[in-house]
Length: 151
Image (cartoon, rainbow, N blue to C red; front, side):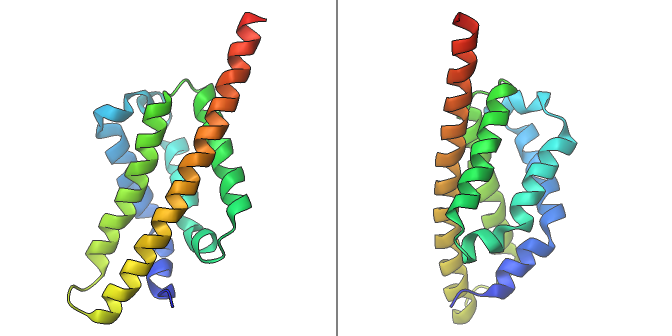
């Protein structure tokens, strides 16, 4: 069974994880448009993701993931962030938490390895769902905005 301890550690450190991610997003050439988004807004979005990660990956509340990430995608479309940058930012979010897991788990301990592998699989599934939902929200909003400009 998945180590709730690892999930709780991530949630407990949501603030520092969010700060770390904001620095990475602002430093990446692949997320240049995020420079136009206030750091506090970006940090709040990411903090929410990390803070509620256990609920989303353990309870597997796909409708909540879809709703939340569709809204994120729509918001970023309104802020004129390119879709490729949105997808890369989600990838950075996943990478950030995976790097953190590497830091807090002990190499060589079978129980930690088993829990970590299970959590990494669930994180992969979560971020796949999140990427899809964000893309759907983005495309829908971008399409609506294009319709209003031409109509």
